[in-house]
Length: 384
Image (cartoon, rainbow, N blue to C red):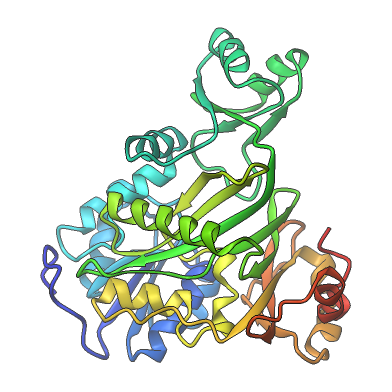
């Protein structure tokens, strides 16, 4: 495939290169296999989950030009499965193979300042924010965004890491010294009714598809449960989809993108973060849609047509985190209606996502809270 072409599509048995060997790479490789592709994963360690299901692997640093060249020459198109990889490395490989999404999109999503600046440039609403570099700028940011607010690292933060919630002026110095490196971002706290996300995918020909908006709940900064569809009005769901499409077009995206949003108490939508890859909140699609988020992503980056994201069921996704949830594994696999997905990780550390379960309900019949809890069986009561 010509690295600069947007018109070619990959034939069966072509090789999809995936940078990163975590669970998203694993599930992307499994989706690629269903479409007749082989996957080759660039990973830093030999025991990463994605390598258990891939056709080939290159082990080495994401920053080593020799490793990147060897990997690129072994594949036909390149994508990535999480943000903490080298955007410069993607740029190097783009001279040899198409990289989708592009290194520039990754660069924007890796840096909260760049992300928020980009969103503002295309008219996407976000929470109030200010850049913080020192004590003076932190005090000015606190005055601008108001208490309480969240101080975040601009890079490398995920699952609640790299954040400090500041409730009053007495916590300013502690917050500043706790987080590094600078600069940081001070974000105003949003009084939201719920958090939602939209998975949007854009193909090489500009076709855009969106999955239904999903309602998300977090515990200790980690996604705990997703409900699809989100319990919002049709008008709000349509607006969330339009926002996601505008972002995808503004980025000139090829691939899939997760757009996280806040639903304000007055019905306003504010974008929180974007992630140019399959997303935890889209895992429900694996069992509730004929073409899930991973297949959509593979289709997009390989140039295949994008079908409409049909949802045949309502769904609840529940993450399995750390040793506590994994201790329930015998009960989970023995409970009717729980559809398990394990990631092949060896050690169930606290806070580590080990897998997830999906529960399906007939289309349009998502139950209330008691019904959701009952359907989760042994995992009931752990979603608060």
